[in-house]
Length: 221
Image 1 (tube, rainbow, N blue to C red):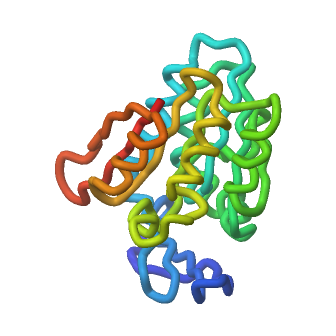
Image 2: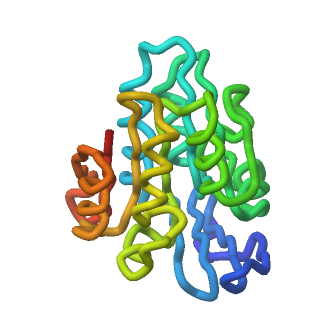
């Protein structure tokens, strides 16, 4: 058995060099300039991020879900496993190479979730998708955000495009009445909680990991 890490692919992105490395058949790490973004061995919070909000939609006929970003596909896989056959999932990812990796070397991790017939893949900023939904008739039953910069950037930037107050107002409008916003973040964020309350959301915080990184999933409605 080969226990050595090997480089599978690399891509230049705005933040630097994004690298995919692999060991064995199912162990992967994605990093940017030596900063680890995600690993295949730590995914409980990503699975919970997809499973919990979409599990609440399982009895609906044609629920609509917006999910960003794609990552290793774990959140998407969990969402699809919880959703009914008539669901539609818009997946938004900034970097096209992530989708290429999810369809290629990492497809084994999620049974190639990206190519599920319920999925429509888009490339760009999820903020634009939310803006369109907030202004139009087709809103979402759930919006799921797993963005690697997390919620904390917005504490110093009131105009943050995803987690600032105005962005959360748009997100609430982009949801159907009773719709669920699910957000991944590294740890509890009091500033984010205050902004959720300020725009009319109720919320709860889930902590899937009992050991290791204390990542949080916020559910807001």
